Length: 208
Image (cartoon, rainbow, N blue to C red; front, side, top):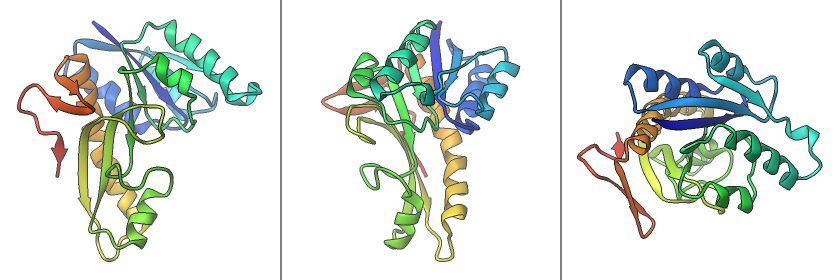
């Protein structure tokens, strides 16, 4: 039985989608813990209500990023994770932390990487006249919003779209592809070679 630890900073809607899919689809895994850098994060209440260990490591209590990451890793490692899932975790992680979880930490980013790393992805897509936008699940590397791509979802950009309207439609697709990616990992269905991830079976790695 694989063990999943999910990191959040707020509501954690992707975390909720993963927890629910894990139970409904009977993955060979369990969500062992949900950890937040904000003690007031709403997602911690959801996790606790599902009987999942819910912990907070308040980044404001640490003078350096390195000190915070060290304590965060200590808390995560208590739960012996096979996969660490970043689900709206709004902290830039140190290279040492990323290396500690190399090959077993994933993230979702609201753009079709490598396009639009960083913030305000939907606004930038609209401003530049993109006809398609989307989301990407990828393995985490030391370079921000980079790393081998596991699965992507695409969404048309409508002429009357706002940042909010586009964001809402893409978030709905995030709730589909992120649980799928985690299921693939805990079921050993992915192959990574030369920076390219392929699915061992026939499931598509693109949601349209």
